[in-house]
Length: 221
Image 1 (tube, one colour):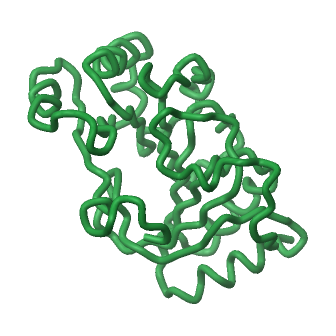
Image 2 (cartoon, helix red, strand yellow):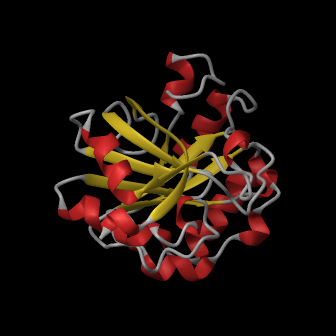
Image 3 (tube, one colour):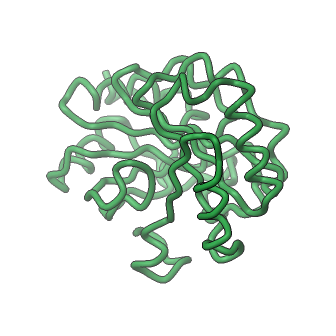
């Protein structure tokens, strides 16, 4: 079945998960090409252009490539992985074959067809991204407790926005983990930690661990 599914793949690589509750674990990353959004702080601009053909692969070829690493944790990222319609049966295939599957998604793409066995990390955009008006709040109805909501914060305005959405949409009732992630190298981390400490919400501050291990703009890590 998956041998008949085609994908535009930017890169597949084996590294350390840098974000979320699985930070620090070995992980195989499958980065799909193309994204509708243009976040001001995007750190993967090379994967944005939707008309740019990188490497066309079938679902079977992707599965076979991931298997080479002998790691059962796989993350689909981008770009925006959910913009490629064939991704949904591929996610299910990985889930059914014993993989811990996580999808990093931009808050705009529809998550309703993602297999419930997979974990979604939903990135709700804040004002500094300049894409916050693109948030698809219908997606919040399809979150499970094991999913994670992420806010990338570049200012106090962004943090206040995260608090506002958390309150408005009862996010703490929908998911167990709400991540506050600083825009890399552009916000005072001590100040951000104080905001998190003093918030009435159950936020979890995180870093992009891979950017502290390797050079921040290095690809394939």
